[in-house]
Image (cartoon, rainbow, N blue to C red; front, side):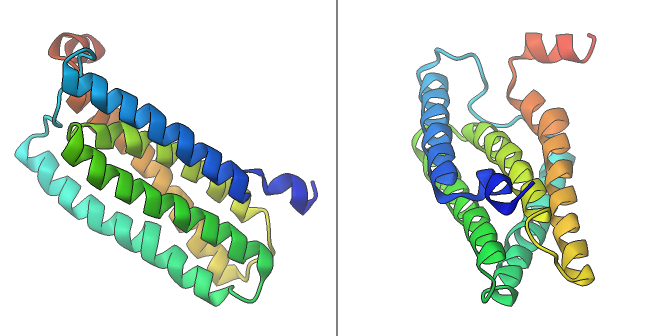
Length: 178
């Protein structure tokens, strides 16, 4: 596979198209929840222990998912392929954070779960492709794997903790077998 084929998730056009679709879907879901048409909770129904976990998780996400890739962008600034990869990645992160902040205020707080799920899936795709774009030195390759594994763990957290917290009680209970 040559680098032009491997750049699909990390081309500007792909990132902009994803952002447009994710924003429209998130706005639609948030609006439907706010109007009461979509039977999701307007806020995550976390226990106090889950909220404590989330406060720590968000800080880890900032360090591993934002600051570390930003450092890698600076370290590889003189290399066009990793520079484009990290720039596309960080653009998607920045738009996600802005969308979560604005939509959770304007629509419903629970829309951050939908936004986070969409962007986490895209981010895993970006990172998987990014791992294969360039011959990274071993330390940087290890750090890039750490970022990827963190987002896989984030997707697991979303599926097993965040998504169930916004489902209506009857569906949540049926998922738990109760």
